[in-house]
Structure formats: structure tokens, C-alpha cells
Image 1 (cartoon, rainbow, N blue to C red):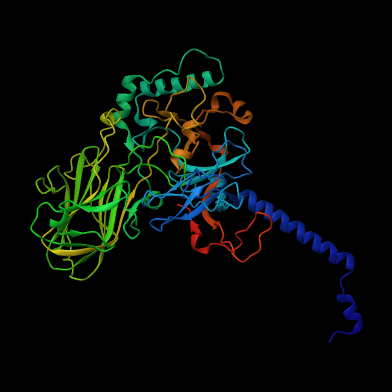
Image 2 (cartoon, rainbow, N blue to C red; image 1 turned 180 degrees about the horizontal axis):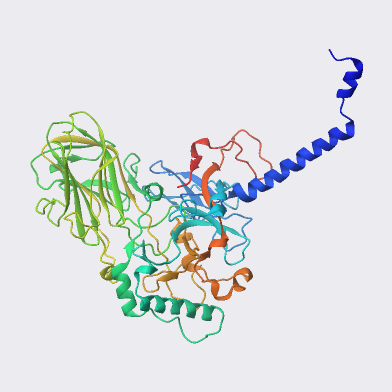
Length: 565
């Protein structure tokens, strides 16, 4: 036990204690600012340009017809940009059953909309740099708006330095500049220079020069499609129709799995569990009827001229009811017909054939699996995306197409003809059955993201009369990215004023002169990589008294917290 004199020596003078406390507070604030400036920073998503990956201010609704819950965009009242608001005449069209819902419980007029997602953004990897830590294609990136230098934008990075990029039929095509001839590089750089001169009003005559035909021919030959990473692709699938949520009214414009032979068909799709019993009719199939598969987003309550999409995925759970039988899934893209065949004896194949039901042509690829057990369920999925076919069994890819032109499994685009080919709507997905008996449950059709810009109806189209009508990186206006330049696109492509449509230059970029190119983001304007939604829109408490027109969503929706892919 200390003596009184010792105890007095342990006492801390009052002014020293206050000083230490203040120093601790200052140090904590400095560390917080350093952490925010260099490590991780939180942001709020204001708009729906990245929906449904990330939500801006929005409402949620349960479809009056099929019961699917989905989000639709509303205007953030703090956002001064011209955005079409939700009004009493607005309708939210269900992405599953096409029903135009009228019960919009949340709008910007009642001012009790749901706020945008709150996200965390990693900064330090970009500060360190390097091949492994720097920006990568398909990352979701926060960056400074080239139009003002103060607003933070968030988009998906699709274009990297030192490559040429263009968007054709909704897909991204690229080629490294080092693979192009010196003449082509020079001509593309000349057009980039002309773009600067017109932006700076050094040149005022006519429109931007067209890319020479010989340059386009070389690009057609050397460009390849830039496929999404598996993580990004999983996020970018959008529901077309989920048979677990069938429409109740079943109007003509609503989707349904319809049998080809009516009452004589062995298919019964009237219930959520689809059943097939062979009746000897050939061919016998069900088809997704009543729905044109387009690039529309339910988030956008105001539509436009929306293109069709042919990059699709069909998936379901198969339960064989007998030890024999054959199941075939048919997908079509630009008049090419592909088949995934699953036989109950375990043989699976991929085939391209116009024959119904695809038996005549030799297999592109095949594999012998263990026979499917009677009564044992297994997941089946067939996808045609980014010019790649894949059949999955039990969640694992078992057969795929190839990029090797010498392989019988080769499947790739002819870019030259693709840029000139009419966009004929593909036939709807079909599922064929033969011989045995089986059931399909959790039957879902999904589509890939399809990048497009409706220059006739989009109010955010390029204002410059000399610019290409379809925007930067369009099929006839490929963009050359220099060593410090990136290109960004929004997942909600129809409602995203992204790299394709930038037509304003802020003073901070104008001062750089020719070092800044419209449609690109310079390396030093990248803020960081978005990686986690830490606070999605919260739940409202119905019994909580409201203050004026406000009813705050104070309970976090833990189930929607997620990694950003």
C-alpha cells in the first residue's frame, strides 16, 4: 500500500489530464481523416445508373400480379439535375410478368422514398498501384465527374489504357494498340486529335471525320469480345421470367411456358413444377411465350426504344422420374441455334444445328457423366453469353464452347458482319423432352447486360452537333484509349450518362488541353474501388409515429448487405 507521499506523487495535475485528453481527440481525428483520405471512404449512391447492382433513391414494390418484389427509381430531391420524377400516372412494369403496377407506395412527391445504398470504397490499392492492385476491367469504380471535378460518379470500368474499344450489339470489344498497324494507330489518334480541336472550338466545320473503312476492317479482324469476370457476370444476369412466380391474370403480353402440341403434348407447365411424360410425339417442347426479351430495366419506369437481347441463361432443377430419357435446351442468337442435350444415361453435349430438335449435326463438345439417379435432383443450367456456350450440371461447367478457330467447339463473332447484320429478334428459349419422365422445378430464364443508347429518345444524348450520334465507342466510332485513360459504363445502361455520352468538360480538365479526351477518365481522377454495401435501404417501422411526411427506415436490411462485384 503506497504511503501518503507516494500517493501524492501518483496524482496527475488537472491541466495535464485535460491536455492528454485533447491530444488523444486530435490524434483520433487525424487518424480518421487519414483513414478516410487514403484507406477507405463511405459514399451514398444518389442515382440508379448502376441499378440493380447498386440502388440510388428508389421505391420498392411487390407486383400486384405475380408477387415478385422489385425496385423502381425515383428522384432524389437533393439532386438538382433534370431527372424525370415519379408521378401519379407512372407505372412500374414488373420485370418478371410484365404487369404495369399502379400501387406506387413511394414517390418523390410524398418524400418518403428509400435512400440509395451506402457503400465502402477502397482507396489505398490505387495509391500503391501496380498490375495486381490497380484498376481492373469490370471493377466498380468511384471517380470524379469530368464535367465538374467535384461530383463523385460510380460506374463499371470496361476500357483500359492502350487499347481501342467499341460497343457492338450490346457487347464490349477491345484490342491492344500494340496489335494494330502503325497506320491504323496514327489514323485513330488523328481522329482523337480532331475531337479535341472541335471540343476546344479550334475547328468548327461539319461533323467529326468518319473512321476510314480500312481501319474498321483491321479492327473487325483483330478485336475480341471482352468477357465479364465470373463474379461480375453473376451480378449482371437479370431475371426475364421465374416460373416460381407465375402471373395470375395471364394476359397475352404476359410470359408463360406453353407446350407446342396443346393437349397432345407430354409437357404440363400449368404448375410451378413442370412435368414431362413421353407420349411419342416428336418434337415435343415447351417455349417461353408472351414475352419479348429486351434490355429494359424495371428500375426505369420511363421506357424507350429498347433492343432485344439474345445472351440468355436457362436454369432449373431436374428430377428424373425414370432411368431413361433425353432433355434438350434450345437457345438462339442472330439466326444461330444452339442445343444443350442432357441424357439420363449421363451423356451431355453441345450442338449447333437448325434441325428440330438438333439431332442432325455433330456435337461441338461432349462429356460422359455418371448416370442421373431416378428421384435425385440436380441443378442444370445452359447459357449463351459473350459468344461462349456453357452447360452446367450440379453447379459445375461440364462442357463449353471454344475460342480456338480450329476446334469443332469454336464459337465466336464475325465482327464485320455483326456490325452490319439486322438485329432480328431471336426465337424464345425452348425445352424439349423425349422418352422418359422427369420434373423441372425453379425454372428461370435470365438475360445478360446489353449496353445500348437510344439516341432518339434519351434526353441525355450528346449535345455537340459534330459528335457521333450513337456516342463515343459506338460501332462506327471506336475510341482510342491512351496510357492514362479509362472508359466507364453504367449497369443500368439506358439510364446512365456514362463515357458514351459525356459532352461537358470541367475547368480542371479544360486546363489540360489535349491531355484530356471526352469519353474517358484520367488515371488521377480515379478515387477507388467499391467493395461493400454496408447499409442498404433500411426497414421502416409501421407503428413508429411519422414527423411530417417522413418515416425513416431506421432498421438496417442486413440481408441486402453484400460485396460489390
